[in-house]
Amino acid sequence: MAADYPRMIRELLAFYDLAGKTVLAVGGGGGALIEYGRAAGRVLALDVDPAALDKLRENLRLAGLEDKFEPVLGDFFKAELKADVVLFEFSLHEMPDPAAAVERALTMAPDVVVFDHWPGSPWTFLAGEDLKVAASWAALGRFPAARTESHEGIQSFTKYDELEEKVRHLGEPALSRIETYRGKTDIRIPMSYGLALVRRADIKP
Image 1 (tube, one colour):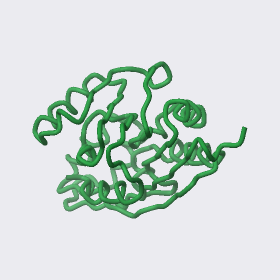
Image 2: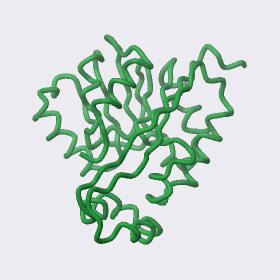
Image 3: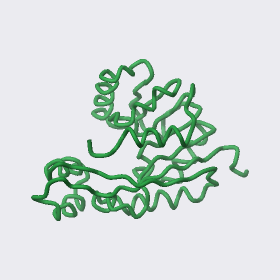
Image 4: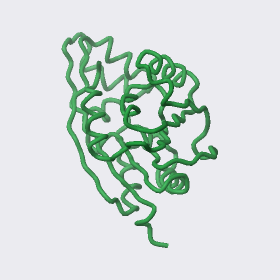
């Protein structure tokens, strides 16, 4: 396990009460954090990647959570979905226009929770996502956050091949930046991440 997902799920549930709520999880494919769904009423897991949704379905089957999640293939900016809360599941930094994404989310639910990498994280630099992460949090700063918090975690890999597999889909510069770990074992890379809550009721007309 690269990251301590159980801990991250606990932090999410402590940050925002999902009990009985319909959650629109943006970037919800894959399924690394699906255990939060046990607390929710229903999760609409929206992803643009069919392979990620296939992986999600398999993880839901293994976890016995198929009745809680509805995998949805589609473009976030075109999806006509409503929920109690929109959860950007480590996906806001992947949006071409993060500010527009938050604005769109606020039309889909009264609350928006962003769970994403934190600016300045060593992991996001190695993954080549540092500029996108910084831009997404800068965009989020345009909205009045009801609450924000940051956490420190670790990405762990027993050998270099596992790290390479983790970042392969990110292409360059990620693959070149991880070269410093080639041949090493028991690799531990600091990963900062954060949570933010934006409420429609706090947005001034």
